[in-house]
Image (cartoon, rainbow, N blue to C red; front, top):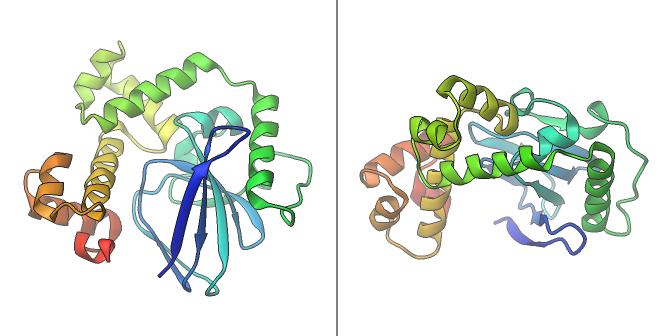
Length: 223
């Protein structure tokens, strides 16, 4: 079984993660974009709408830096929906000095992030808005409620959400709900209780959503 570990980066505060493969990677949607060092390439992993599977050498390690809401669009200058369900070489999007990943992939990823941030000098108010929209989705607010909360029309909200998250507010909320239920179940809650706590109508609703988003039942995902 693949092993996963995550920690806060000491230089950026971003979440750095490390996965050691068991020969097959099954990645489910989580509502975020990442910078990744994978198979000796620096790539941007777009937001996923469905499970992604990759074959790899057993023991192979991939590193990633999770990008906060709106940060990918701000740093790369590319609408996030152009990266949805894709893995794109960072060199295709921006020009950066070469970085050595031999000393430490985590350190190198943080330095790449710092380089991008320094060059882009992102609009903090835009990032605060993206973070607020993400919180609304995590809280399960409807599209109408989220739009009203942020003084936006529903149409403007959908356009903005596609640009900064890679998909609309309804899809983002569904993915966050799925991830919350999965986390609760992995923490030991019975599936029915995890589903209800996360906001599903019942366990069957959670199962249908898991099959749609991840291609597997919750029980199979928990392992």
